[in-house]
Image 1: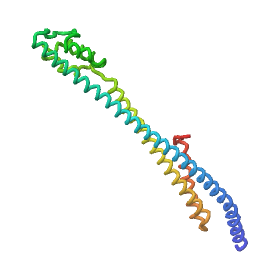
Image 2: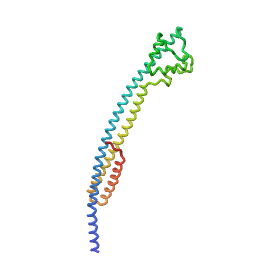
Image 3: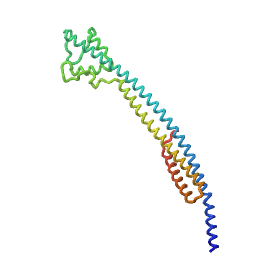
Image 4: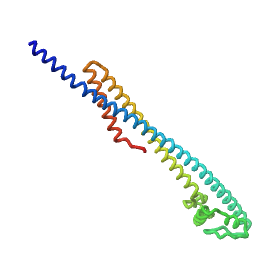
Length: 237
């Protein structure tokens, strides 16, 4: 019994001696991978943060351009309103004075009259809307649109350009938010890698076999999850 007991003790010591170097090698490999993963996650987080900053700046520039173009569009619309009101007043005065007849459809401007002068000064984008409006016989048909501004033909290129700039700004802001989320994801991954380093370090220092194994298993699982996560995460170079 004594001899068997000594052999059992000897076998257990040999097993521990064999497991020790293997476990140390495994922990060293885990710490190396965790260190590399932490560096890579930090690098990618910084890259995506830069993408976020640049894209937000581009979105801000697009919104500023949209505001500028919208101001131009508002000025053009104001000019169209003023010229149309002036023309309508002049046309009404000439009709009341008997100088011209009430237009019953199209309108042929007389360059020598005030209304004709104003009509020829309508903007290029406003004139098609006025012609379409006059075809509805608005001066004699109460069902006609109230003004040319209600016509679908009235479209300002500046307003369309401003809307496009706003759309571009919204799209860029979405890209920036996505980049911000990706940067946060990489930061979280780096934190988990740091935990892997902690678990591996504690496993190499603790004298208790069970605690060592538990720490090693937990660290290995966390490391595997982080490595898989890095493989599926988008990369910014």
